[in-house]
Every structure is written in C-alpha cells, then in structure tokens.
Image (tube, rainbow, N blue to C red; front, side, top):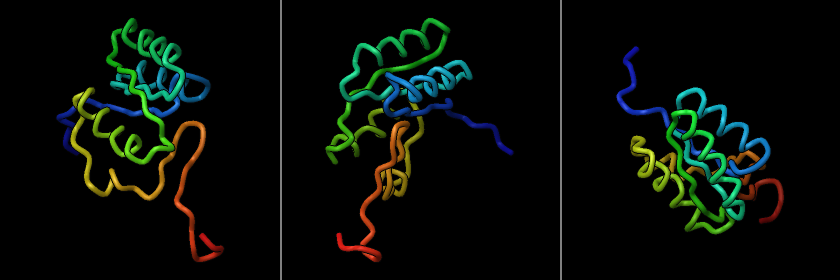
Length: 115
C-alpha cells in the first residue's frame, strides 16, 4: 500500500464543545491537522486550536453556520485550503448528508412521507 503524500487532515464540526472538542483534541494528539469548526463558540474553538498547537500540532478555527447552504458548502474547501489537505472530489463536496459531531443532517426522503 502506498504511503500518503499529503498530511492527514480532519474537519471536526462543533469542535469547540463536548464530543466535537474531544474528537478534535484526540485527532490533534494523533498527529492530524485539524480544522476546528464553530458557529457561535469562537472562544472555545480557539482554545481547542491553542491546545493542539501547544502540543506541536496544526489547527485552525473556522466559523460557519451549517444551516446556511452556502456556508456549509464552503467549509470543506476552506478547511482543505487552510490545512493544505488534498482537494476533495465533487462527490464528497456534494454529499447528500452532512454528519456532525452533534447531529446528522440529511435531506428529506420523499418516498415514505411527503417532503
């Protein structure tokens, strides 16, 4: 199996608090570059970034309101640009569902009930 030629990078949504924070810190300790997403928890997100950087890792805090389509769509490319991660395929950017640390957002299914 070929070795990766790009840094391991992760985007953790809701990473300023609770489980998102724990995931971001764990990835940072494991050597991943981490994009720490927040919507309103700027101070907490910056603290997570500070902890990762203090431990010798790379991290950046990124704000986005994931209920706003344009902000949700721009978050992954922004994280990739900030962290130097590989470009994501069109299929990944247009995924029909968005999983976050705190919840999962999926489009309605019209087959079982009305949309």
